[in-house]
Image (cartoon, rainbow, N blue to C red; front, top):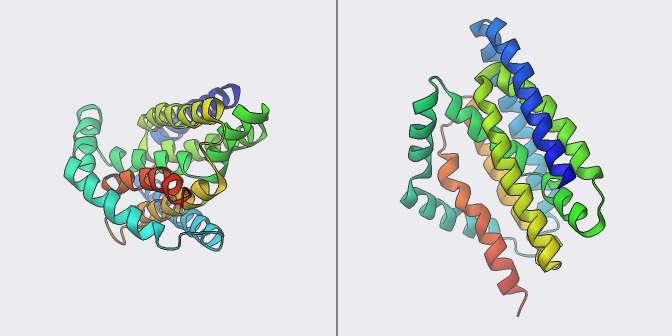
Length: 225
């Protein structure tokens, strides 16, 4: 878990640095940074989808995942509960920024492959690299949305810690096919988050989050046949 702890620490440090920048930024600069983040999120999302779609063995998996996950998320109404919870502690658009941060930090090849490499080979290269990238990202996010972005560190710890535990105890529980399908769905969610930041289309991204669980459940079942 050394790599994950480093990753979380970099997010916390970056959030603190970004908070000081946030206090001195005028509204127009915060707006342009939000737009920059939106563009970056869209590029990251598109890249994740395009790179992995060619390797997908289940081309319609992402459609099923988004449909089933979206219905489940809407039924639970994750977005509403999340907005309400964040609203109790902060005003403004922190909820949107925090949702974007969680997706950017958690859904990426480094964040998924890193814990697996650490668990199976004690190789922390991916996680150290991811930590540096997340640290820089958190500075930009916190300078726009405030110190509340630091809460995303908790989500990263749970996410990477869970992957690490599964890979360590079950060894073959996470395979390349699962990672490919998971990254495609995650890339689409990051793209959707970018659309919201750019105010092109407001999408309840958090209500779509259960879609990430569908490949984890379905891929192992399909591989039995």
